[in-house]
Image 1 (cartoon, rainbow over the protein chains, first blue to last red):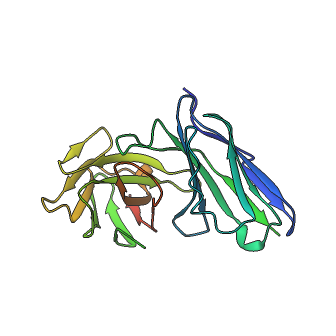
Image 2: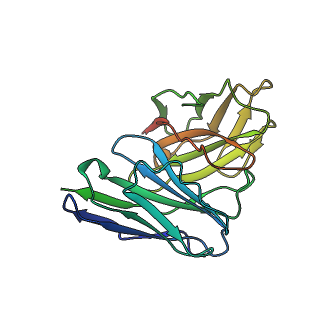
Length: 115
Length: 111
């Protein structure tokens, strides 16, 4: 079946512009995660959605970052007034449930470059 | 706040077993040990996970010490396609609020 998809695969934007990144999770997966990965570094947790519960936004680095998810479907990550330090690969993952017995499936990521 | 410690890099000869260690001395009783890997320019890929018993699947084996303070991921016959960064993660049973991937071990399989 189809895996996690993300769009766009690459995005180049000018400093100060807003960007919107999209994630399509695997159908039926109730948990969805966003991560950021800077060049040569590990993954940094950003935000987590589980069903209709309030999202855990504790990893968002500033109020310029926000994310939404409609039910158990598509999620969008929005970065307002982008800065050069926002340049990174943004990864989305989904899993069947928020339980350690279920692995996370990752999308290919969106590479964001802020010039 | 890193919960796991891994070597920065390792080499392994093609066809030999790759043994990747991970220390997680502060692991809690309800935390699982997960391993993921990330091949260059791709998203991370799940490999295996366990709580306290050793586990094996088609990709790898996971050996967890009796005190659960460390574990080893074993790729029995490494191939060039196994070259990747390998992440050891501890994760609570529920609530993913503090997932932490760290920087992992960069495994290079040498022909």
